[in-house]
Length: 127
Image 1 (cartoon, helix red, strand yellow):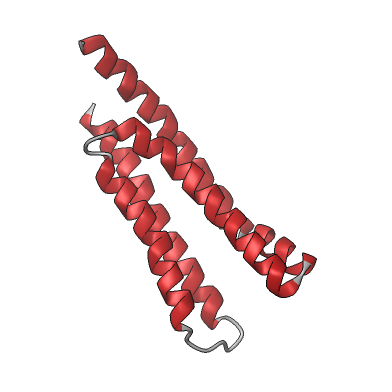
Image 2: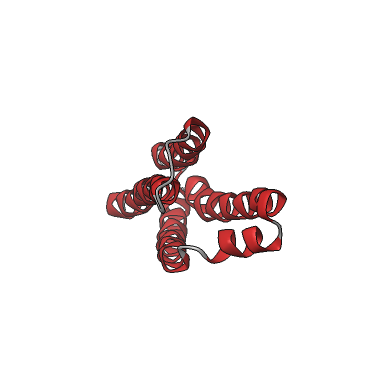
């Protein structure tokens, strides 16, 4: 049972790392310069997933459910912000850039949901 929580926690840690790395790559892609605001936003985004990973120790299923919700929320927030700066092109760019990585992250987080459900059912059987 402990391995299920560890597996879900690792999915959240990986998400934090990939989100941060993706933001840093996007910032410097095409000869871009360092931007403190992007760094702060990236740290906040990654911090959300690290916090959720730590939270799996106390409330595993809730933290695991919050993972995909937070990830989709970050994508939507990015799309809305890019719409204000670049219009419809910015929206589409935010949604579809890095699509393969986003899909892999989402699949891993959804797999963790199944593990979380199994864990919750096992905990309910104990009580």
